[in-house]
Image (tube, rainbow, N blue to C red):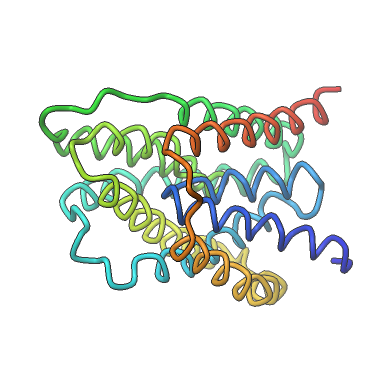
Length: 249
């Protein structure tokens, strides 16, 4: 990767890590969409880098906050996530070699849909959802995580409906993304799709992601949750729309 492309990759990665730290989601959608829209790297390659960076982002953001997680909600979401993630990883590997253009179109649609999910403001439930609801959201998020390292939209919608504190919701989402990234990386490795270049680029990105995560924890933007959602929505619509226009025209 040329220096200019590498710098662009790092800027997108830093933006995604910062936004995910202050909101609990969006790293995958921002990075995957931005990198693919600018043709910086293939979808399969980028998905592995996102998974490795989500590990670093999650561990750093959750440090010292494990006791504030709702462990039951995270557990049932992960139960639904695992098998669906395996299916998504398999489908991504097949489409990367057989239907690459269709894969990019599907990515663009997914990012736009993710932006719409972010703008939804679900009414908080009076009582927490049951295990089946969390497992179903986990399955939907797991499939998207396997395909694009984008587990956010269905899980964000599910957790924002719960009568939990905002901090608890964000920590639960980060914990699920951390677990899904770990499992996804393991699966890709078992398929023989990991290579040295991926770890080299991940190593280059790591200090950038760490710095962006630290900034997100230490200096979150002085904006309301509603304003943050609008900004994330606008960014994702632009990214997803750019992908669709490039592939369809």
